[in-house]
Structure formats: structure tokens, C-alpha cells
Length: 246
Length: 276
Image (cartoon, rainbow over all chains, first blue to last red; front, side, top):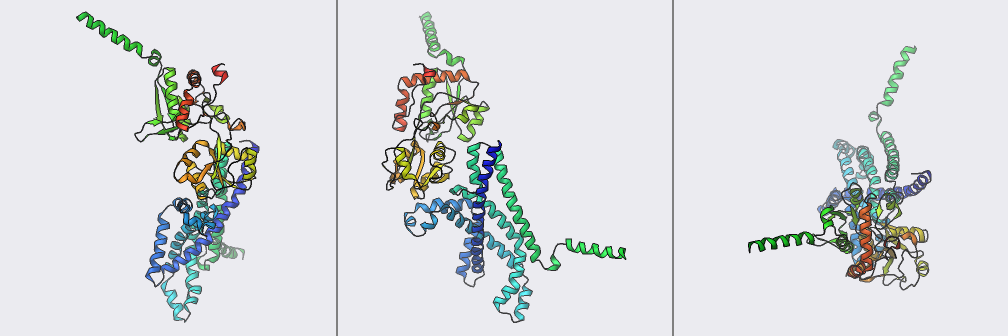
């Protein structure tokens, strides 16, 4: 690949990074909200709500995302009544379809992450808070949520990375994100290895930054006694150094 | 009586020997690779037999060359590597002659050329344009779908880039679905998939837009389809070309084209190969 082609490929890919990031940025909050609703419904007193939420999580965790995207995009467009309904304004757009399908899928996985986080909250802590006379909302905000978030964050950061990579499937429904642009560039330049190595490098850089940021957040949120040992080791070294100085 | 019987047997045996073309006995059979899933060029009957425009034409070529031929179906993606490894002697099945392919491999002369056409809903305002410039004006600002990596995509890149919103599809079926659903205003592809679509029951709301776009007006669209071979099998290529010259002159290419496409896609005999 000569210099001019490399530049052309690089600039095309750079433009597509924003589409990939926009997909992930739209999907993750929506998925989080869906997961919150599903988690709330699964803990509900009403068996009906619990059943619906469990069915949702089961269905979207057990089917491939690609199939979900195809059903939503190509499947639903088969129905004339749907094409004449107001929902078509949204479902007509490939980008919206990709975001809806990925949010539904991400929501199901995130609901499981939330369930794991909540299950890790010690019963004793909640009972103690109740015994102190805190309202249910305060118990949730001050005790349950902080502990659950800390426990769930490593699993949720995994979900964020997976979602970013899953955006590559949006190219199958004509959303030209990184992988879609790469496929197009490949048939244009025939430089298969170079183009896809560049794409892989871009994903790697984005995800490394995300993983690093989330790791910092984990450390920030951890209570002092659970923080990684590095700082303490530093302190110990100082403590050891002092007597030698003296 | 006895003598006559042996004479007769000898005569029959001799006749049998001379009836079989000598060359077919001498030369190894020609191994032909084809996709088998690309109507009307090459396809497979439910019984598992290959059929289609290219298959019938190749059979006629083999007849004229007096060679035995064996057809093998293999998906298009793997065909060029298999040809380069020597698994096949020639590939047929609507293969466009392109400069990129000509760098590494050799083509027979072109034997067919399909124009590319836009297709749109019958209710759209794109119908009934008589020239490309008229249609182009009507297309500006519209959303247009095209299969990636095709001549049609090249056409849009050359003629309409920046003026229209382009959507790229992996295959013709997805393109058809979105055209029928109305997500795209128009779609561009070779004429044959549109004939298949507009002829089907779901496709009756769609029509093929005039004018036909072909290499006479847009030379980068290429000279059509040909048989693809390795560069070193020069002799087979010459024999194949000579047979194609005869078949074109006899009107055989036109005849099977009418049968499979409903119109004539045959290209004129190449004067450099066939002579005047």
C-alpha cells in the first residue's frame, strides 16, 4: 500500500470512528435504563412482571445479536401496517434500528450484571440499616447501591467493551461504522491485511482507554482497605526507610 | 457366415473409434468451475444438475472444441484461489472482465454484457426519464442502495458521489428487502436481478428505471463477462475464443441469451480474435 492510499484509508477510518463511538454512546445508557427496569421488575412482588422481565433477559441473552438486528431491521419491515405506523419513523433508520437492537441485548446482559451486584450485598448490612430506622429509599441509596455498584463494576466494564465491539455488526444493516468502512475500503484497495490491522488497532486503542479509565474508577470507588496494594507498599517502603535515615 | 460376422464387428468397432472425436481422446478433459447459485448465469436444478446461460454456452463451446468438459460447482469466494492452484482450467458464471483481475489472470473474449439499471417503486417520481442526465437530476438528494464491491458501486462513486446518500449492502437480497420496504428511494444493480425481482410476486410494486447504463456510455463499467483462466493455459484460451467466435456468428449466443434473460446480452465478436 503506497503512502497516498494509506492516507486515504486512514482518513476514511478516522471518520468512521465517530459512528462507532456514537453507536456505543447511544446504546450503553439505553441498555442501562432497560437493565434497571428489568432488574426492578425481576425483584417485583407481582409474578406477572417478574415473568416478563425474566423472559426478556432469557430471550435476548440466548439469541445471537446479529439475529436480533436482522429481525428488527429486515424482519419488522415486512409488515405493511408497521410501515404505515408512526414507529416507522424510527425503524426506517438503520442507525436507530442498530441502537434499539443493541440496547435490548446489552440491557439483558446488564440486568444479569446488576443481579450479581445486588446479590453480593450482605443481608446483614441491609438489616442493620433498617434497624437504624432508614427509609427503604435511603437504605437503597446509602447501603445497597454503593456496595452493589462496587461489586458489579468489573463485570459491567466487560459489558461496555463487548458492546463497543458489537457495534461492528451494525454494518450489516448499512450503518457505516469502522468495520463497514473497512470492508468497503478492502474491496476498493485490495489491501486486506493492512486495512483490517489498522481497524483492529483502532478498536484496541479505544478499548484500552476504556478499560484503563474503568479500572481507575474501580480504584476510586473502592473503600480504602480494598484498594490495590501498591500505595500501601509505597507507604511501607517509606516506613522502612525512616529508621535507616535516623 | 462366420467371416462376415467378424467383419461386421470390426466395421462397428472402427465406426465407433472414428465417431468419437480423436482430439477428445488425446487431450485431458477441461475442468470448469462455476458458482451454481447466480441465476440466470449459473444455477443448480433441484436434481443437482448445473444449468444456466453460462453452463449452456460452455457446453456448446466444449462441443465446438471437441473436448470433454466436467463442471464443478463451488461458491464464488473460493473459486479464484482454486483456479490459481490448478483445480480448474476455467471459471464461468457472469464473471465481469475487470483490469484488476486481468493483472493476475487471463480472460476469454467477452461474450455477454448486461447494462446496469436503477430500480425504484412504481409510485416514485424517478420513472420515465429518457436520458441519464435527466435521471441524475431526479436522483439528487435521494437515498440510494447498492451492493458493495460491484460495478454498480463504482458507477455511484464516479457519477453521484456527494449528491446522494449511499447505503451499502452485503448482498442483493438485503438490497431488495430495503427497496421493497421503502427505506431507500432507488437501488442500482445489474439488469438481471431486477428482472428476477420485478417478475416475482413481492416485487410487483417495483420497476426498472430507464435508461440502461452500459459501457458504451461509461467505459469503466467494463466490456462484459468472460471466462476466467490462468495466464499459462494459452492454448485452451485460444481454442475457447475460436469456439466463441463461431457461436457468436451462428447466433447461438443470442439464442441462449433470449432463453435465459429474455433479451439479447451477447457482445459482438472481437475482430482482433475472430477476424473480420
